[in-house]
Length: 391
Image (cartoon, rainbow, N blue to C red):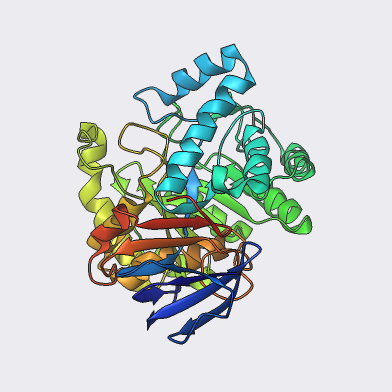
């Protein structure tokens, strides 16, 4: 048994002083405040730090290398064979873990390599975070990220695609409900699938016991996603032909639905500015995200790591600070959006996102108090994955 001491604790929902967290066989067995460690326990006194749940990045792409051309780089590695792609994914996963990200939800790879990586980190938790994989995202012919291999057309084909991913071991289904920035020529502000296809995807995923989330920039696509009963919506930028339009009626529908909006925020320090077209949208997007927060939309903060140089796989701590900055969310709420709420959105509340008995001992310790200063999240003092200390 290991007994981990710290000065402070935030368990994903509430704070405490002088915590003692008991860990055995990779799981948390008890959480107390003060008191002596059990006789015979290995005591790890971390000193003047705050102990947090390991972070959950609910939107990442381990197969993309955060280069200026992640799609072209992936294609080049794929030419060398799946082992070359997988090795790069291992490095990305390890980088995330060392930043305190103990769970990642990979929402788009090729050849189901993230499932192989999930098996590896399950067998050796110190090698990387827990990996929840969607496989290739389901997309229309020629749709966003078609090059990952998930093109389908029609409700029957959509159902088959969901079943195929479930049979391979996917932990989540992802559907491209609009265009995206990594696929030129596909309208970002227009829906991609028909309502019948989206309903088929949700029905099949839920029949198989899997959560399902939708990439949706388009405001009309977000409305379709809510109607179809998806569990989550990625990006949620409410784009129209005239730019972002966070229609209050649709925002209220999103809040009432309970659908989790995963906002892919955060940039690595020193990153180059975004392209002018994207920069022009940012003021309206930031105001709209603040509107989502005020309306009570269930918010998850994630990173979209891997898609460009500003999004390395250890960027999530900056995403959390970004959420608080642009929405007015408290530090406590921002951290919860990347721990307890993110784990719930991923269907992992029984394993991750909290410091509580019975959950995996995935822990992050940071200097100082992140409930006062979120910047300390970027300087981990210790990281534990299933009880194994990796930092």
